[in-house]
Length: 201
Image 1 (cartoon, rainbow, N blue to C red):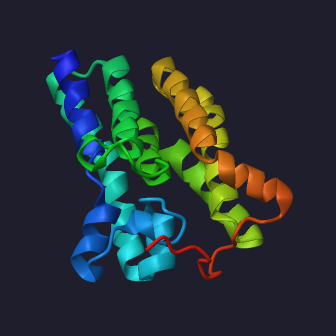
Image 2 (cartoon, rainbow, N blue to C red; image 1 turned 135 degrees about the vertical axis):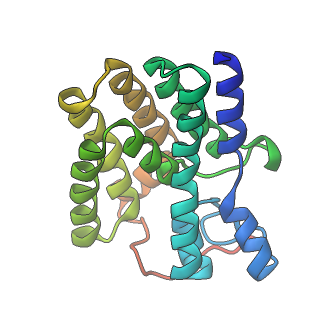
């Protein structure tokens, strides 16, 4: 049941709502437009606010759904529960259905964080929103979120497994945001609301 729950979590995470919604409403592969990333931020740049909000919510729900199923299958094992969130994010980042080309996992991480601790989630989100509002850098806000989350969970989580998994999620996020970090340091990172300069079509 433990192995099965993690496989299910990965398969749920592999559903790319950004890809599906872009195909449905615009007939495009979202990965061939904007930043080339299959996620909510690139959906915002390419398709606008409405589709981006839908993608954000659905991607977050993937994490919660995976953890909920694991909770049922493993009789509430906290380590299995925490790891299922990790596997959902692995699925989002490297989806089996789409040639292992996915997103950066932040929206799904939001859902996982909520499943770990609503209060830790809320604190991290508030700080992230403030950072994005002040700088207009979504990537910077995302990195602040994954950095702050383990700290909050250390004080608020019911099980240390949540803390360790959140640290792994932070490492994932930093790896996936490597180019963004380089751009931030060089002053080249696009700000929220700036038009995309890249079209791979």
